[in-house]
Image (cartoon, rainbow, N blue to C red; front, side):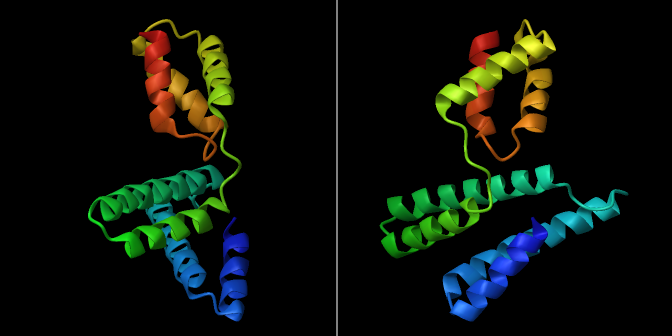
Length: 149
């Protein structure tokens, strides 16, 4: 993933696409920060699953900012956030549809033997290990809670 992003930065630089270059540099810097934190914790480098989680977090932050800008009447800044979201999403795997997410949740519940809300952590851990970057875990958490509760 790191090589893909580095190559994308180089291509955007050659194409003089300033928005893309700045967004990809932010992504690259965030990945380097995560790698440094991982090394400090005694690991080698962040895994691809952790990087997918990082990208999803970056998208979520931008979606929140976009909403705030839109509510404040700052359309140009909301548009800028939307462009950054589109650029970051290119590096995430295809997102699961609601039906696929429900099926994955049912499978995880069956696999972990979860029967109550107390088992929610096991189900979420199974989902995160298998579907990192492919689903909104906030939505998934609410769905798991509804099925178990």
